[in-house]
Structure formats: structure tokens, C-alpha cells
Length: 69
Image (tube, rainbow, N blue to C red; front, top):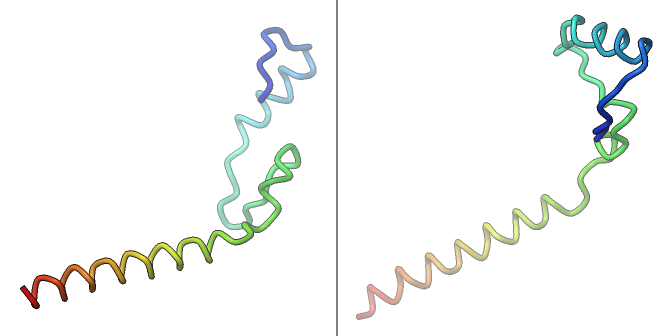
């Protein structure tokens, strides 16, 4: 993130032009300044699947323990 206070006139003009242009929702493109936005998430779907299975096992175990008692 750029936290500089002062900008050159060219940077100010570029910033204003970017702010005035509407966002293209039909063809979204990651910013060139954000290379992490171009990379697909690795392993996140496996984490979500693992947590969902773990929660399912805990819920089934709790339900079965209440039925037995």
C-alpha cells in the first residue's frame, strides 16, 4: 500500500483518471500491482472440506451420544 503524502502532478492526474473511470464488472482483471490476485488459492478448498467433514463427524457423534443416553 502506498502511504506517501505527496504526489507528483502526473501521479495526481493518473489517480484522478483511475477514479473517474467506471469499474468493468463484465471483464474484471486483477491489478498489476497485486500479483497475488492473479494466483489461484492453493489448498483452501481442501481446508474447507476438511473442516466441514470434521464438523459433520462431531455433530453426528453428539446426536448419537444423546440417543444412547
